[in-house]
Length: 173
Image (cartoon, rainbow, N blue to C red):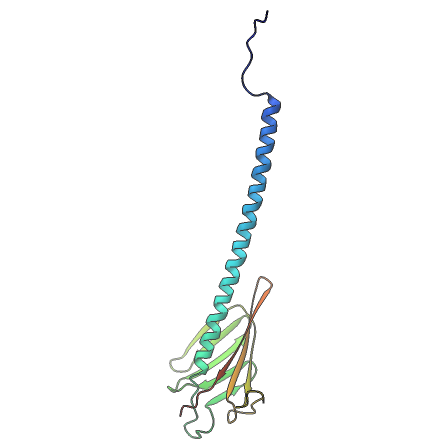
């Protein structure tokens, strides 16, 4: 006859196998969560950079739309500097404005009151181009400029985000 009772519970081998299985499931879940967090962080950085790009481009375009015609010679715009890296002009309210880039900064400076603001701090390239009324021929001076185009390229984490904007100058006098 058997006098011993059957023991209840788990053996050591069963416990080890369950612990190994749980650790493998935990590692897989941790890997998936880590990948998700990295993807979210990367997307958030891209969205932030694109927001900076949009803000800087829209602000520059808004300022360019305010270039006034020269009060002495109404046939020309009141632009004092127009090269590939810097644009200086007078707005319709008489305020002097300078847009310039010294990577990684794009700055907007006003003469009255004297204020300088940073539009973005992630720029790799800012290039201005000036065109005549046909939109194709390069302008030779402020007397024949009708369009100002700028290309702004921001860089973040090895990725480049370019935007090209063309602004038609108004014929306000």
